[in-house]
Length: 314
Image (cartoon, rainbow, N blue to C red; front, side):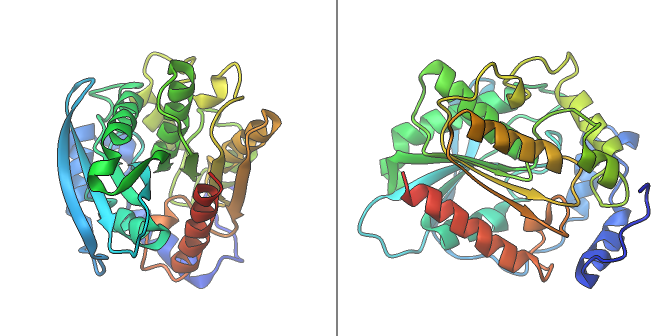
């Protein structure tokens, strides 16, 4: 389909995609410069759900100091809350705690969970699996310290959007393989599962829909410059997916990584893992972090419901 978009898109989606055409060409910038450009373009937040507590913690990570932001919602509770260890998206290269602050606050308030957002090391300065190791360290920390902020150490999930969805999947593999903390659920939101650029969604939506094949190739080059054979980089490379935690997999139809996310969900089911999968038709990569988009609110409500259901089933 090249760069010509479908004519049947929701008007708000078409308008947003047109606005996002100004997103910088990531291949033309050094990582540090790219981060500065993206931060400079960040729109001020128009909503910031209040939390009972929202504070940064610095723990000892595998690469030195690791900052976590802990969100405790203002919800009625007569029992400890589930805990969600969250990894933000950003192509493994950019975004940070602040870029996903509103999303984490909204998740904590709507789902009724404590969110532990991870300021993991980013590529290319820290190639993979450094980011996964940081998320895993945060998981271990959350398991040991959940009670300190009203969380339930017996109900800890890992979640992430985009590149963070990959980190949720790979941290789940690491926890299984290492005999680490029991994970209640792995929640992957339009996850970047692998580096196969030949799938149907890459062929159909690799250009003209905000996230591009060119950009995805560049992200993988930054994150995995020495290859992607390890399952801790590409979770679908694992010999077996058996024994992994129940999964929520939400994909976006207009997203190049959509097919890989759906295939991973199918493989989890084949391995005996309970999976709730949903494709958001007519929506593009990253849409959940665009609260101004009219379709985002209802889509978030669906994601929050899937998250509540999998956490309550644990």
